Length: 119
Image (cartoon, rainbow, N blue to C red):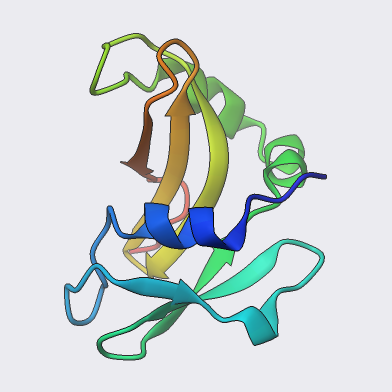
């Protein structure tokens, strides 16, 4: 299992908004970096914490619908379909994101997840 760099995850989280205060400045709590890929994200404005999951190999093996979903996601830059899942974050019970990279042009972007949100 290869985990992404903490700095990379922090930078990519800035492309979404905090579920509480709508800011987009986040950090990863380095005191809570677990080897199993369960990290804690932290909004730098309101201090709201949320889970960030970086072990995507295990997740895709245990969630059979996700690989099919990833094949259908269009890239906003080149419009090709098919992305690689880098990590995911559950910002609230209604808002979860997959952070993906287009397999064609390597553009990285967040994709809202309907699999993680509970209503």
